[in-house]
Amino acid sequence: MVSCDAGMSPTRGQVIINNRNVSFLRWGGDLRHIVLLHGITSSARSWWRVAPVLANLGFTVTAFDMPGHGESGTLPTHEIDAIAAHITAACSTLDITPHIMLGHSWGGAVAICATPLLNPVRLILVDPLIALDVTWAQQAVPRFVEGIGQAMHQTTPWLTARNKLWHRCDIHWKAEALEQCRREAVDGLFLHSGSWNLVTELAALTTPTLCLVAGGDTTVISAADQAAMGPLIVANGGLLHKIEGTDHNMHRTGFDQTLPVLLHWIKQGQV
Image (cartoon, rainbow, N blue to C red; front, side, top):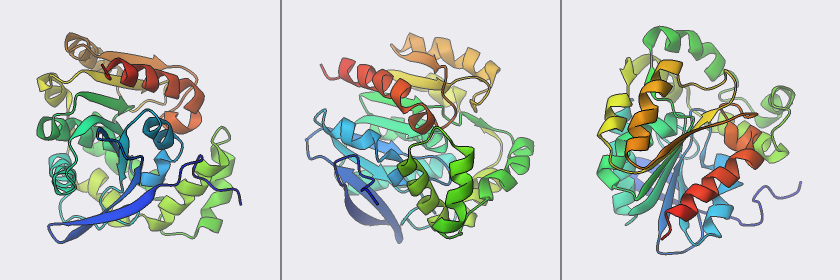
């Protein structure tokens, strides 16, 4: 099999926070840092194609395995602010002061809550899970737990069939992530984090924010929340930008459309 590292292999590291292992991958070695946070049932490997590009811009890129995912331990609590504090403590221990925080979906929610603690220069949200309703969450569980704990050869066929626009390495790393994922973490988000909406937290931020919204009806951000978020983001020098032809996993399905927008935003903030 051809290597799934986009020409730059990351190093694996770990740090112990409150007796819990936090695993991470790292690309590059510059003084400025970018922190990447993945979505539910994925892992740090989901950034396999994005991270090398960012490292080549002159950043140290650190992608964490979120709690209960990849090689990271689970947490006894599943509230978004608690996970944000956990990631913040890991960054502090690793002496990371992020220039940019970038989060997808669940990772985007955590990035919003971590931003006041870590004070990045810029924040990037990739179709973030800005809100969670308990009723919807309970209905979503069966879909999100499919394949968890199964061997990669079992999940690869249906992942391939359902995600025809994904790179074969996206399939590979997602299959690995499902094999590694703990059901406890998925149930924790959907069943034990309550109902919440982070528009208020977003409104309190002064960090310029790029929020990318998936095309069509695949976004997890409601029309009402998009309408509320847009003026708040623009007021702080940010941008709410919908990318048609993508879906919720836009860094996979719409890589060629999404990456140029990310790079333009990041280069604007390098001055």
